[in-house]
Image 1: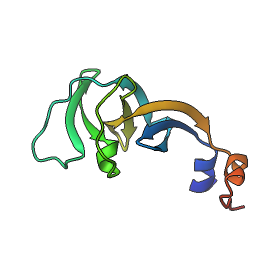
Image 2: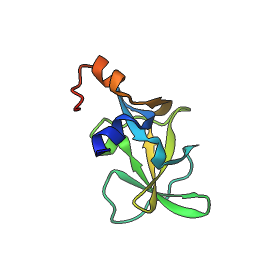
Image 3: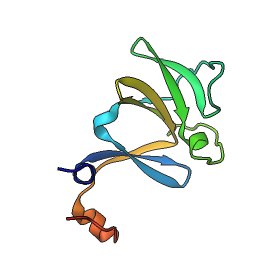
Image 4: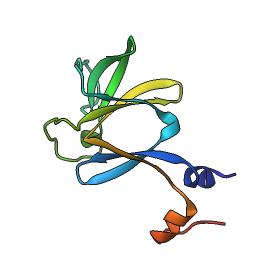
Length: 118
């Protein structure tokens, strides 16, 4: 199975950032938590808000709005941090909301008129 087939037959957490929705592979999602205290850390890119503590470990928090060049917005009750495990490390992704869990199938991609290789 190639990487495209793996992506098509995978399950994703759907998150919102501004008017856009993004899919995060569910296999990388550790937890979805409410926004909590984020401590600023020096010498980090602007889109890295700082670090938070999750299960006793310090985790960097990336603001998806800033990373995707979307205008900043105040936090609300839906704003959350998605804790991800990628390449052996944990990181938090600050998103406007966590919406749904969906499986991407060839049928869905065909409906959206996206080419699906054989």
